Image (tube, rainbow, N blue to C red; front, side, top):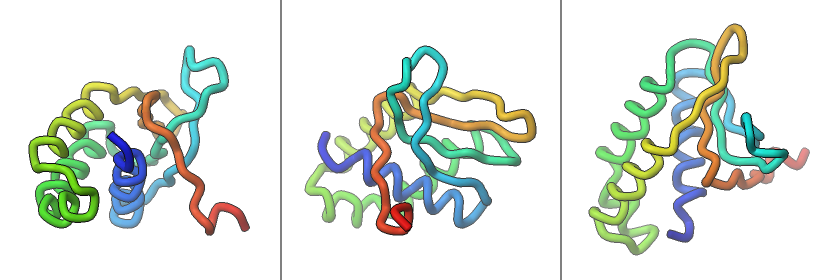
Length: 112
């Protein structure tokens, strides 16, 4: 579904704003240099990140559907697929949570 990578990236940026961390391009184990959407967090786990995604979508589902032109069922199906595809790597004092099938999109601030 087009535009969902950017929607999930915006949600993860909200996670960072509220809980610390950073959204970035990441190449995980076995990805052979292919980058994907990720969030690095110092505290918590992938379950905290997933919980925030579910909360965010629940609170904003009508706006998300209007902006992207999808039904509520489409959005929740995409969220379920995202959760199913969640991967993690240890960073020593934190973790990176990533999604191999979701693309990272550079923001204008990233270009500076």
